[in-house]
Image: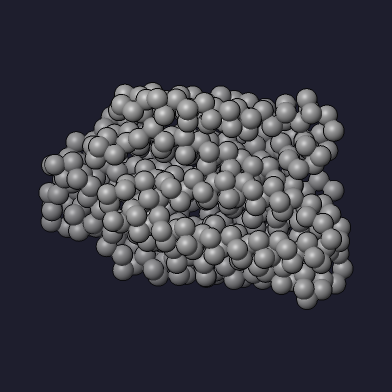
Length: 487
């Protein structure tokens, strides 16, 4: 094994590890608000440098044996690079919006950006895994940081409850996943994805099917797909809004990318075994996510159900089990990340005159009368999430449905399109409340300029101007997807 080559391929992860340890030591010696801001911006700088180190692998279409490191325990493929860049962008955005929120409460501490950095490290290891052991290590590193982030507001009962629920249910899901890994190892005789694919050819045994089902059940919890979605609304509502922004974007990208890797690389020879599971999860998530959101009055819970709904559309791309399906899924994932970050930043900007968060749907009634730009941005995000043209969210759904049709799953695309109409109801309900109801005059507080800038950037990305990115984004997604389908 060439250690020099291995460390070169894993250089971004090494950077995140060393930087996290150094910043953790620095945080122990710095306890002021100014010190916390400095550590936050240093963490963002580390993420940007790591992203610059990762980008060439995607641009060059890295794939095959040359991307393997540490005795094939780690891969720096183009697919992993695509997912890592989205993860880093989402994490950086979550860090940018955090200081203004926490410092208003007097609760910002140096550990916050360090926890985010270690969570990013875990997610990068997840999407670079080549066997079930490195998968689990990355997953747990991310999860341990996430449990603390959810309960970061120690004096807030909702935050403590969210952290406890996330920990208990996350531990259960990890146990289910670990049991599935042990079954898969028992029947395949190996934990490497390539070895599992080679062992599970032809007719699959009943024991191996159970292992596959438990692995996918554990991953379904991490992506909050039905029927393992029950934690999402409570955790999203109770967690601090910057943490919710992080949860809804970066870990979602990592978990979905990991699900694709396991399905295509480890169980690629058993598509008929896992495809029904993915199809069920996709359709159930679309329908239950849409129906669950209809009665919600809290904006964060509404966006939580929207997240479940969008996971269903993303899984349609995986259900196609083709390079086009995976590429379409990656395109949608990139657009979804921009929409999600924009949505939660908009919620973060909704404050009353005293600076307290405004999260109720009734409290934003008539918002367009006194905060025209914010209301317009929220409306754009809602229309884009609903997949209404000419906003960029329509393109994400289009490429996923097109891949399903090309793979011969016309019925799946048809059901997905029909079910998306249900989802449009609650998105349009938000717009109706803002533009046609009598003003509640609750969300009148001033917003931080950083929040305004980030929301404006997300709004531009999902506007019709986003279609200028169609070709380059599609090409990068196709390159990343192709790295998974090399014989």
